Length: 342
Image 1 (cartoon, rainbow, N blue to C red):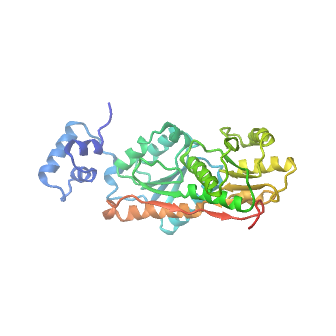
Image 2: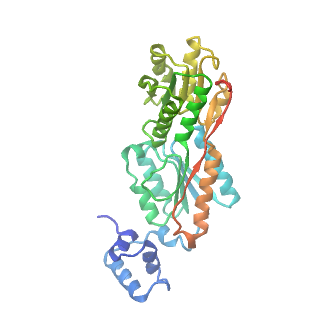
Image 3: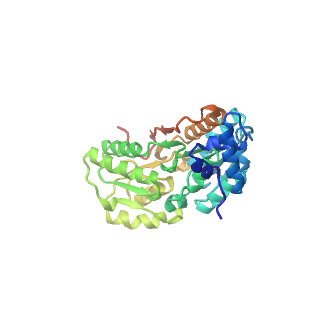
């Protein structure tokens, strides 16, 4: 039998979750008749209070739960640094967890931390959660009074604060940049085609081709499902053999480096007659040969923004009725030696 929640009681009486919480806490703000009705209904239906939901008004752990999809992505490390810096400044501790792209792990972690261990969550969705299209666990947490800030990979349907990158414009502007430096056969390599950010980058790429007056060649749109980055070269090699490609935009650094290696093996010179641009301004790009031009998503800024949004919501509880915000972080092109200048 499903456990009765504050949300269920609110629905029963046609009142807000906040009203139910106050009634159960015997708040003077709620009329005696409303309190009695709600308390009676809760008792008759064996309502068990959720410690975190009912006590948020009066207590604070000064701890934030952070959930990232994987630990190998340098972008998430940058975001983490941004969160940690702001949290430290504001006197908050952090508990960090990794979902490993698993829906079950994400749900399990949120259930574990929402027992009163933390005041709020900052998270990016696991790939499996996106594929399942099941976001109920987020809504349950929000309904119980724990705020969430999503970053990068977000669930549009969930009404919470979000921090995202302008992925569409980032990809579109990159195509324009490459076409202006002479590239005509620009390939798009994506290892995140299942995710919304991957789709937006793909759409931005197509819009960029349209604006540059370049035709769309579907053979140059390469979606890699393989998770082992060591196999990227073997996947890309036959495509490079069969098609004329003079530039690549990649959604991640590993596939961009694989593409650059194949081009160099074919005798192409970077950046003279082959250009490479990757999303995420990470360590690999800075240490590749030649150093790679990237679309910087400003991970640290994204993390700092997410932390500020969450802490503002936690510390201004009287104003929590304010509608959730979506903050868009603009991308920048960091020019290095894998592209020509103009």
